[in-house]
Length: 366
Image (cartoon, rainbow, N blue to C red; front, side):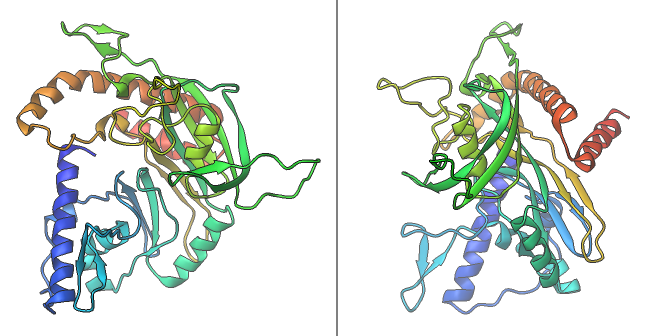
């Protein structure tokens, strides 16, 4: 997230936390207020909205549900712990208080994005829509496109299919199971299927004199691969596991050891210094259902604008750093845009998503 968005997140989380404490512990009821600046300066920009569906852009670093821990909790009178880190649903319901009061809106989650993932998130506005869309997602009726970055090149193929059962592994990670033996054709438990396409990214840096060159000045510019993912299932960590299996772990993924292009002293992959995992939900197609016409959404990745400020960093140094990096980030963003367009125009098999992307590009050029 940018510095401004990170500040908004912290302020909103703090406010909701204090409000929850007041209600749960002291019995204080909040007064109804007119819409505040939070409504306009939202953490979740609206990408599409209809009477039944809300589609927003989720920032990275926010979980779907509220989070709690022994070190981040408030005990109520009975000794139970209340979550104090709001998730997407709580934050969105807070932002949309006016809609809830005026229209009786209640948002329902119908799918999830990992905490580290940014991009398109779909919510339903009523129970009937929620039930229908949840079934669509579970049955593979929703078409999705994701993009990711890696500091490595594919080990074998530049494109192909990653599929198999997934099972829990160490340190909160998942892994693909081996193929069934003896020619068994039965589908593995927790089966995941992902098609992928890759291309290179020429990252251009800026030297001390302000000249363009091919040098890499920090881990975020050490990018060798842009990957386009077409998941046909929706399993936990599916794309992160697929990227690891392809030999291109995602930059910034601490669980699956992104490598950052380097090895530790014992030969294991290390983790780069970038503060976010480079995975973004970019495209979505929902077919017609009930009285809702089909929905196509395009939300391009903006990885080079989404890097957090390190905790404890001197705010006085941020402007200077941003000035030094602004031209580099523009060059990187342009290179990323070209790679994304190349992968989409050559490989996207969902006409509605591709057409929406091209229309947005045309509108931006006019």
